[in-house]
Image 1 (tube, rainbow, N blue to C red):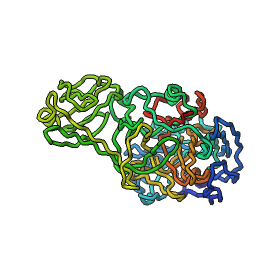
Image 2: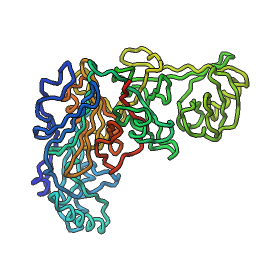
Image 3: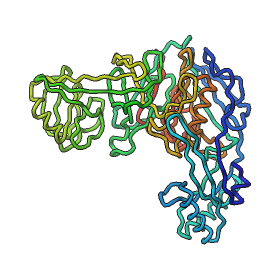
Image 4: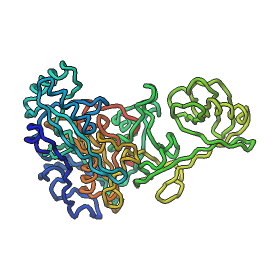
Amino acid sequence: MSRRTLAGGLAIAAALTLTALPATAEQLSVGFPSAKFPLGTRPVPTKTMTAVSQGIDLYDVKAGSSTDGYTVTVLMPSGRDYGTLPTAEAKVAEVEAAGEVASLQKVIRPSVADAPSQTVYMVRVGLWAFKDKAKAEETAKTLKDAGLKIKVDYLGDDGLKTTGPWDVKVAMIDSRTFRGSYAASLGTSVAKRETVSSMAKAQKALLGVNGGFFNIHTSKALRGEPVGASVVGGKLLSEAVPGRSAVVLKGRTAKITELKTSVVATSQDGEAVEVNGVNRATVENELVLYTEEYGAKTPTGGTDVVLDANGKVVGVRGSGAAVAAGTRVLHGNGVASDWLNEHALADYTVKVDTKVVDLRTKKALKLTPDLHVIAGGVGLVRNGKVKITAKLDGHDSMNMILRRHPRTLLGVTKNGSLILATIDGRQPGVTIGANFPEAAQFMRWLGATQAINLDGGGSTAMVVGNKLVNRPSDGAERGVGDALLVLPQ
């Protein structure tokens, strides 16, 4: 993006520039690439390598320099920082009526595999060097006093042309020499959030990163619940969002794929019903399965049927109680409650069948104790090529695709080695993060032929040997829904 043009108030056509990939993208073994850093102007990175354990190397990588400054962005009536051309032009007039000069900026969000490009317009006022943020804040106050909704923006966050900087941690786990295993953890319960540090310490993990997205749109007591598939030790603890990306871990192997799950309850009288969810809040007429890992009370306003380990009904109760160890609870409200009252009587047996299906192979996964699944955020690389499935994975907004954020990334190489990376961001002058195209490009540069974006933002965390090695954007480690752990055995 031309800073001079922005300051002059002319329209800007913004585009993301992707650099050529080095030959290492198709390497057969895992090792840090010798080519220049793939983002920005492709600077030569500085890196420090630490051997964590047999087969695990940790790289501390820094690249680029800070040249971005600040501007003031005018928010549209929708509350977003962009809008249509007529809406943006109306905002320009409002800014000028307040006595300031506005710039109309055209921004093109790049297309991804399942969503076309999008052209939007932003309205911005002024341009200040990094050291002059206070001056941007003064202008912001003037506009706010005039009745405009605004925010002060660091231009490195835009997702357009930048020089960085980047602060990255990369763990490379060599399939040829690593002798441990991979696992998922939801901490002490599904419902509660917990730090990666806590989960890693509890299982004596060599290394851990935060896992998938968790539900921030439910009650505070339940916000550790994963959004998507979660399997821990062969047990389904959260249902899949059909077709969304996920990471399947088995022993010391990792695979990226898309999943669907199904849970069916069948009474001994032969009547069967679909179970709508696992370990989450309910909506009207739903049947939800709660396991002992849930860690919260079942919802009120329905019927609870308590099953023992063999599926025998050992209790029928009003809802709103805890799930005892060694039991499961089928909770229903509305028509689902009616089904339970008719077909899950005391001393009946209700069989609960669970399936997790790999949509690439069309085969069900065997729910063995060494199987773990973490729901991903967005697919980035498939079969060695960039394939960003932002819409399918529920993150096709301008904010998620184009703007830069902290990222936690997972990749698998051609020979099955695992790459885990954190790109810190939201720290102006220190590290700017990455957008989806940059994250995909970065993982290909590292040698991943398959790659996925896990949860990011303030959740991004990497723990090595009980020590947090990255710098979370919140200033401290955040409690998250689940974690991927690298275990010594």
